[in-house]
Image 1 (cartoon, rainbow, N blue to C red):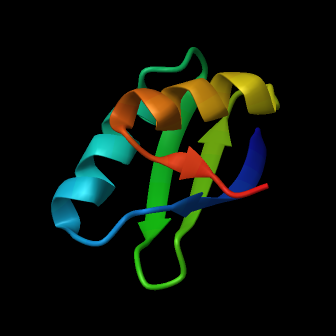
Image 2 (cartoon, one colour; image 1 turned 180 degrees about the vertical axis):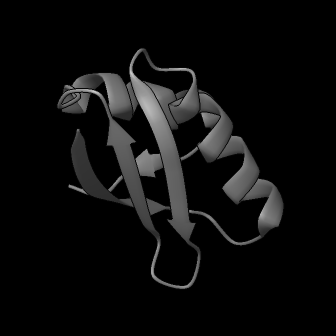
Length: 68
């Protein structure tokens, strides 16, 4: 198992959380997505480490961006 935390910018409400969680959850191997809305932190648990580009693409698909 691998756990990684990312900072996502632009999330302001529960709809944002749902959108980001849904898109990241579609990535192969993802078993859990937890979002801390006030902090903008997204913690992803997966079978193996994810490529940051894949996570960034999923977040972008949801309409948000990973902080650099």
